[in-house]
Image 1 (cartoon, rainbow, N blue to C red):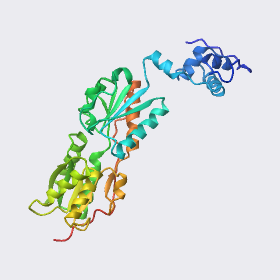
Image 2 (image 1 turned 60 degrees about the vertical axis):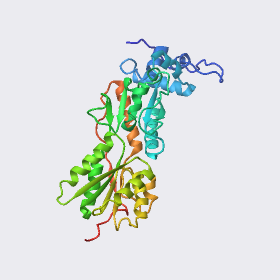
Image 3 (image 1 turned 180 degrees about the vertical axis):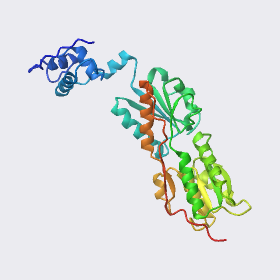
Length: 352
């Protein structure tokens, strides 16, 4: 038990000139307690060691004096930097900007900073941005699409949370996932309900668990309905690659699909260009769906039916999970719900 003074707050604390930064000693003098009590209260370790009234008196004194703890000195003393690395595949999509915004919001509430590090090639290995990540960081949050960068920066040896990653095989790390499988099920049920039976799947050509889930769920759900067919084509996550892959599929002999299911909105936008070049109209000739609900989903015509993913909530949950890991608590492992947004790009297929 830490011995503290609990006398009444002194009416006239002696503080240095107004241009001098107040110290913990000044706070202790103003609150009528010891410096040890100030350290406990401002470090949020006072429970069971000082009274709630004393803790409030310390906080009031610190506020009145404008006292701010020297976090740099404290962190150096404790061996922590209160800095987290967020590893994402690229900054060319607003989705990961949203993930960063959410993560940084929660981090700031807990006195942490977030360093954003994109893998230079979008996916795959990356050069170490630190002389030693282990020395410079307290933990890492990483998208599965940029997982290869972790080995390079030795981030897999730090407290780690993986986003969009297989809970059974994520380097032993905690995982935070959107319910992508349910999103694909919602898309498939919508299209089947409209009467579509011939599907073309424009899949992201990225070796990532999240895209494997999309392909598996689409194939599994469609297979439960007699007379259906799914053909898969792959393209890198660029507009032009999506356009080229879709054009190649449209020139393949055989009946054309009536529904084009795209792994994300950027692929769908590229597919729109290919369909127009072939004189096909969306949705009267072919329905198109995406996944993400980026801003471009409502910028293209017709507006895109897609699955809305809450990127900021995703980032918030990722940061909350890492804070739990750092505190030795079990993070929330429930998937984040997603939902289908139906717009003008889907309609019943034309009668035969």
